[in-house]
Image (cartoon, rainbow, N blue to C red; front, side):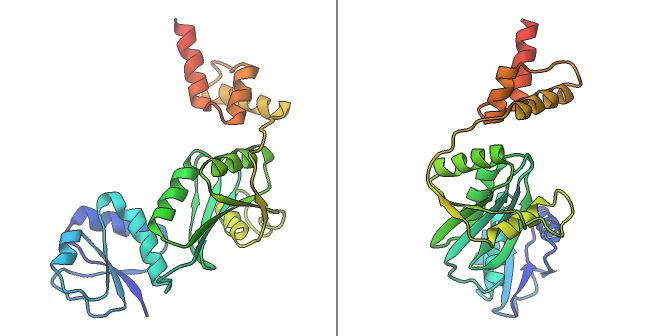
Length: 252
């Protein structure tokens, strides 16, 4: 049975790999450099030069401090026996803190709780570049229409294939705000294909909520104007930039 291992003399790399693997609750071994890789079933992380200098046993994954996440994504695909995967599917649970999950040929690979909508594109690119498949599909839950449509437009601009999924049952039995698990359920449900850019129309209540957030973020020092809050709601301006611009204008 395939298993993961860390085999490097680079202490910093080893430490960061251990942290990352433990955060994902992935089982692994630590091998000393003097210890030979004993099985072709072992998938092991090491620096490129350490792999070149070792006997080619097992599946070696060249890893550096900057590529740890990508290396782990690739290792997890190999660990689950997906040598030549066909389809990578992402599930997105829309919200201010979106949940993201990814599945390869029906096999769960990973989930993430993101801190902003802006992080979605970069994370999808990172995972897609780590896992080479024949096709990529994005499935987006139909909740939170304003944020959903902003995510849809972002995906269309990236030329990604998109489906919108009825997420009414994806949160059943979950703790509140468990967006990453909802995203995994969304990834497993067939949806309706989307081809066209959506028109973003924030409701007055949504714009006022942005204004409330601006007061909270500025510790009560200011409330951004309605027109500026509307731009934030549409995703054309970040809340932090809106507050910064107003602060700068007031100082002039």
